[in-house]
Image (tube, helix red, strand yellow):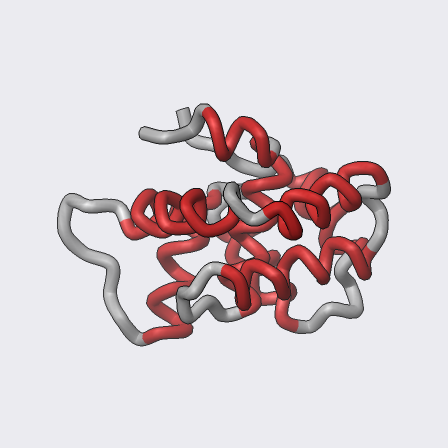
Length: 135
């Protein structure tokens, strides 16, 4: 089963991040692919890096594996995520999560790509991401 956002969820989060310009490309791509994280990620990756996604191995899954190693063991990120879940309409807290993913992961993540990743983490929940979503 593919995890995705509904149109209403996209619009709701887009309204929260309306002043955060880097997220707008993520929303455009998510809308194009009906809220699918994996295909949106792949397109943004190719757009931002110029590197095509190919082969049988999923770049989305590989990226999530690396992020799981980096983010799940980071108490600061976990606390930041928990703070956001207490106030899910806070643009500064959500923007902070996106910025953290671009800097904590050790990957060359564009903010639009990081936005897709953070929205995925919000959708599935950080505890589930860290403990259960390993393919």
